[in-house]
Image 1 (tube, rainbow, N blue to C red):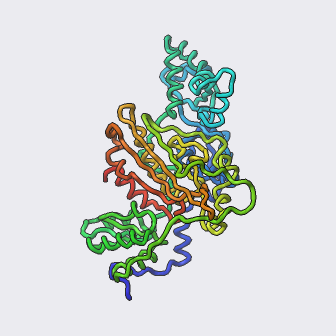
Image 2 (image 1 turned 180 degrees about the vertical axis):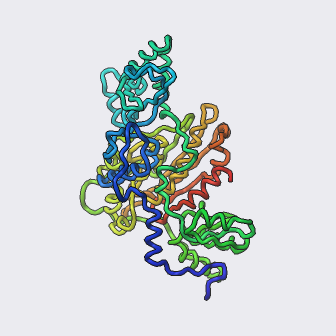
Image 3 (image 1 turned 135 degrees about the horizontal axis):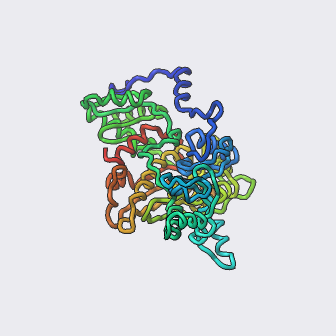
Length: 484
């Protein structure tokens, strides 16, 4: 049977075309030296990639969302295991002695990320001291800050004393303001909703984009934005059939890729979608396909991480102010008995482990306050991790407008796969996220529209998905979030 007329013929992709597409999706940092920076500088895309690659060499996974917006010192410009800092506040230059007395000049202060996180190890330490302290006390007494020229460190008390000499009566206010800013994650730096230095996580958009015909200029605009995509206008009925075939074939990311006005089929899925469409139109039905499934029993070797105490793994958070980063403690690998995600999966299925790139996925993202603990981690593919980024970004944006009166409640739940004996493993099956406004939606801003953003939830992610999640998928999702 010949394919229906609405399915385009696909020519063979030449090696040159393949290489060209790969190059378009390869960060510049893969070749040549990295630029040298001076003073505190925000982690660029190249630096984030280099730091993540070094972590992977050490068997560790570092979230791109965790790294985005952090700073490193100039002395760490060539160090792929740098100390990480965040911007705390802007204060008059005089608060730092020895820098001159220009009262009109303000400087930014920075703090070391790990020094202010209340991680698992720090919590244990605080509980065992003779005179237990809380994080607030530690910050008031021991918090170290540097200025933007890397002068320092200085304690909050010392800065507050300088503030008192500069402006009488300013000591306690300065102290409270600095500690309060640290507890709230520092200066909120608006990235305009873009993905900036983590853009590399999203694959170049290729494949077929079926759109509803009759919209003037839409085809040309999409072709200009996504030059490696075939834009195919279709009538309403044919577009609906293309979407139904995609859904019945259980192809990945259907929530983002299928709507009443478009159907996006990524390049690697075109053949499967075409066959599903042929079967649908021939009224032959579509085979039921299963996901997840069981794994073989673990092979011999080092002791595996403890089994989940309970499955699914569930996390809940009520946001009343902007989300702050969770503690990394010693990192995901250390939290999982020194197993990388790939090595953990390999203990059950070498074929599955070697078929794609595996990472330890945070159920509650680390940028959203999720810790590096077994109850918040599952093994999943890099593509699944990328798929979750726009949703985590939406939660972060919603948290930025949350208040005590209008909180944002989030619930994460992750089912896990079982071994051949029916025991739970740490290999993820499905991760679901739901968001609620118990007291009504928070107030909208120019960049955050809560009543629109909540429409992308609830959402479910298959932890073993290995199909590319592309820039187009992300853009389609962001358009819904913005009400476009």
